Amino acid sequence: MIHDSYVLILDYGSQYTQLIARRVREAGIYSEIHPYYRSLEILAARPPAGIILSGGPASIYDPDSPKLERAILDSNIPVLGICYGLQALAHILGGKVDRATEREYGRAVLSYIDPNSRLFQEIPLDETPVWMSHGDKVIEPPPGFRVIASTSDTPVAAIEKVDGSICGVQFHPEVAHTPNGKQMLENFLFKVAGIAPSWSMSSFIESSIDEIRRRVGDGHVVAALSGGVDSSVMVALVHRAIGAQLHPIFVDNGLLRKDEAQEVHLSLEERLGIKVDRVDASERFLEKLQGVIDPEEKRKIIGAEFIHVFEEEAQMFPNVHFLAQGTLYPDVIESISFKGGPSVTIKSHHNVGGLPDIMRLELIEPLRELFKDEVRELGIALGLDETLVWRHPFPGPGLAVRILGEVTRERLELLREADAIAIEEIRRARLYRDIWQAFVVLLPVRSVGVMGDERTYEHVAAFRAVDSTDGMTADWFRVPHETLALISNRIINEVRGINRMVYDISSKPPSTIEWE
Ligand code: XMP
Image (cartoon, rainbow, N blue to C red):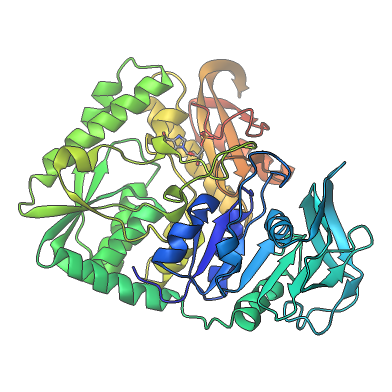
């Protein structure tokens, strides 16, 4: 898709780079992240309306430090440098950067703000809190620049070129800990760079529909529908563009959560009138999984079987040339890798791989420019259910990786019931949206209990709830004890076959979110 005025974010490896891109989009301006070493190429091919240099873990004094090209600063395109981005631009233009002896991390307060700077228009002039996370810092601005903000520890907290076209901040305006950061970024976009907002869901829907129609013509498209947010939103969008030329295939592998298949049906078929081809393949999957205990083997079997079923089913639709997939922007950003590691790691095992190669279909990925929160917004705009749009992530191999040990019908049934109760209580406690992922795991051990006068010897289940922003790291969620008590009582009383419940209090790393 072509975006006339977009902001280019050059990634220097900060963990906050994606956050910068999201903030810019929230302001109504399309943004793209590219590694710093591609800057000249992109500048030549598609000149942006503004450039933001991200932070990063390096020091400009490192021999192999990531470089800022002088041509970026000479291009007449407005530039904002953040943290390392500020140090890099100050250094190259003749300012002084002090090598750190220790890091400054945490909250600081701007004790001075220049009321005439464009960057700080409408920012309170006294005691504005900002978030610092840096080693080196600028101690003298380059010639032709002036200091526009200071803290007690950092006299050069922000600078601006006298003509107002280039500015830089030592702190992080993109994080929530800088409460006026949103206004500062908007000031850069609207007042320094003078860009007009043009990125909205309705304009995205319009231009995607045009593009899908143009590419597909009168051809046919198949898509795998998983029941998750991304594939449901993708299907709703492609359907709006080409209607019955789209054939969504929903493979029921028998490893889904309680009522999941029906909910997808309800949301897509009944609400949006999208005809879904549902294949009940649960027998096939369960048969293949018989006696399998090793988690990676489970994953491989499920992945391979999925491809078989999908391929067979797709044969039902002749004249198909395209495969639509719900790939998101974080999966396509080219990651940069040095020192502290990449700012983004691609989770290869999370995507259905192999389909396009085997089936020789052309790929359509209409969500590849969107972040997850934008996909949710799009889903709502397309008329999908809130419940579906806000659903927690669910692994492709489904409940198979939440049953430790062999997957059997009986165990699947136990887990489905227990999981449904836990989620119901989490929703009732109004915690569902605050939690990244909550679920029950069935353990391969039995424990002794007492029910009435009888001794029981039954399954143990674990409840897991985590807080996360991308699934790469996670902390266990502090679910209130009363809610945990309700979940435990209800599961033990209502699910025959489970007599003990434990709560998982491990973080990732070193644990993972799923148990397998
Ligand atoms: P872990 O367990 O690796 O999970 O901390 C991180 C996120 O990825 C999901 N996950 C998977 N998703 N196929 C998927 O599509 C998989 O094999 C898989 N394994 C884990 C997990 O639910 C969490 O959101």
